[in-house]
Amino acid sequence: MEIIVTVVAALLMLVAVAGTIFPIIPGSPVAVVTLIAWAWILGSSASWSTGVIGAALALVGMSASLVLTGRTMKREAIPKGPILVATASAVVGIFVIPFVGLFIGFALGLFAAEYVRRRDLQLALRSSLQALRAMGWGMVVECGCAILATGVFGLGVLLHFMG
Image 1 (spheres, rainbow, N blue to C red):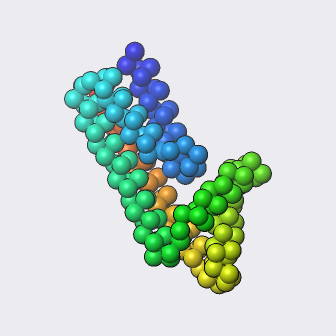
Image 2 (cartoon, rainbow, N blue to C red):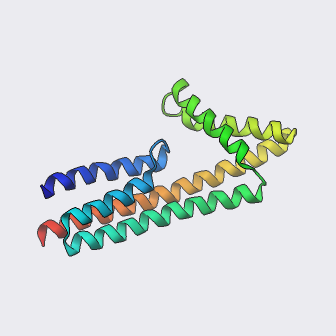
């Protein structure tokens, strides 16, 4: 039973890492729930240590991503409206152009909404690029922390089954 749970948890951790890059699946929350559930089911001190450390890493990544993105959105005075338009455009984009359409749709939707809001091509381009850069860095940090959490999980699996 422990092996099956561990294999399912490992697959979910891979999904979590992918979810930080392709935000269709909430990557960091999936990692946190997976790690804590795995630790709870196995119940060893190695699994609990792994679960808590890995979940903390995933939460740090998610928080850092939100702070980086939120700070830039506030600095560039981008309200929630353009982000909602960009998100809707990303959803449409993924159906029009598989995989990369998510990113292209988001970028085009954000730029279009910013242009309509600001009525200035240069300002719209500048604020859109700043927002995209912040979101990109946020994704890199979140993905990095999810990868670290997955590494901690791998180490925890070894400790649990060898100990």
